[in-house]
Length: 153
Image 1 (cartoon, one colour):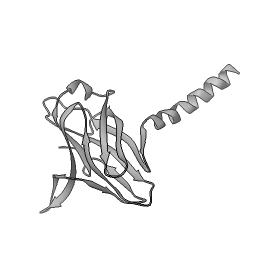
Image 2 (cartoon, one colour):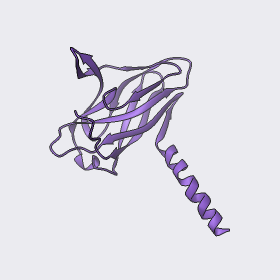
Image 3 (cartoon, helix red, strand yellow):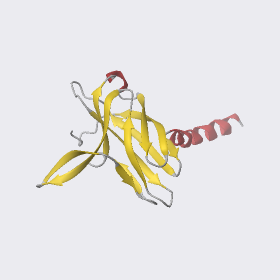
């Protein structure tokens, strides 16, 4: 009986961890907020996540903030003259029924003027608040993961 209970607990543990890393703001679902480990001497780092709009009307991510950085800016990557360039944007539209991915080489949150580098090592977490035009504010916990070798900023 004890073995069955332990097996069941072990099987359910990964499912419970998934829910810890998903957040809700009205009909918006924010999934897997993460950041790469801050390389030595790097002045900035990016944060990523997904936003799924389960509603019938669009919303907008209008700003982001975190206590570990002086600024958190919304950025996108665009092709300009055959090159990928990063640019700051004022807001990101979240269409009704759509899923928007904040990922390397796509939309992302650029953290500038890092105040607490100790929170940007593998295994650490830090709070970040997403401010939506309609759904309001939602605080997420960003998990720091190993730096992806293919992503360069």
